[in-house]
Amino acid sequence: MALQRGGLPWNVSLWTRREESLPAVSAALPGCRLSCDLKKAVEGADIVVLCTSPHAIENSGGVLADFISASTPVTDAGSVKARIVAALGKSLGGRFIGAHPMAGSEQSGIAAARADLFDGAPCILTPTPESDPQALDEVRRFWKEAGCRVCEMSPATHDAAVARISHLPHAVAAALVRAALSKNPDVAALAGSGFRDTTRVAIGPEALWREIFLDNREELITAISDLQVHVGELKNALAHGDAESIEAFLREARTLRSREAE
Figure 1 (cartoon, rainbow, N blue to C red):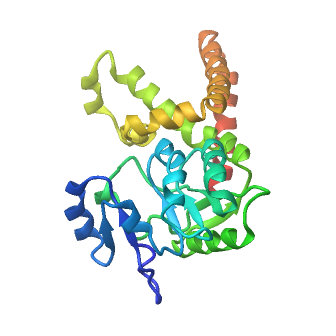
Figure 2: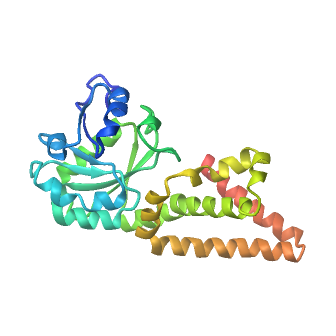
């Protein structure tokens, strides 16, 4: 949708694994070529973008290599990069450029697609010393034309960062829902926007997030440990009725969060 908005729209070919999804995809993207045959979908492509689950992306390189030109750039949209970059670097070489567009919502499927989904959103590219410069340039152009602001970092740096700003918030949202509602789910009917906003991402597909959590588990464990320290500080202040410490705790959080909004 995003790529077809410009004056020179891209010719897009889509692969989907289930034939039953084709009518909905065709209705949403009438200008695209659709196929359940991967070879037909990618043959002759100038660039290939992998938008499946992390494990499916990780295991796709060997199959793709048989269907595309040896110079065709390949990128992805997976939210964990170290494993994917290592696996596809072996099977596809320097033409694979890992990417993670920081966009989307708790919704999934073609019905949640929007032409402006990527507008202004960061897209983190994770090139390595082995990355092909021309492939990197073409992947940069692709994500920029989709609407993203492109930045670059190593796969390890990416995984450490998103563990705290993406994976930890999802884990916290899931834990918060369980803590708030497991004893009495009916209290959800009383919740205001604060609870809804804080827990929105917990509605996301659990099979996908299971893969993400496990693939980035070391960084996520470290982030959860840090969270436990901060929650412990608040719990201790509450136990001692320490109003000054509670206010300082909240003030620091407000100050740090305000920087992001500037």
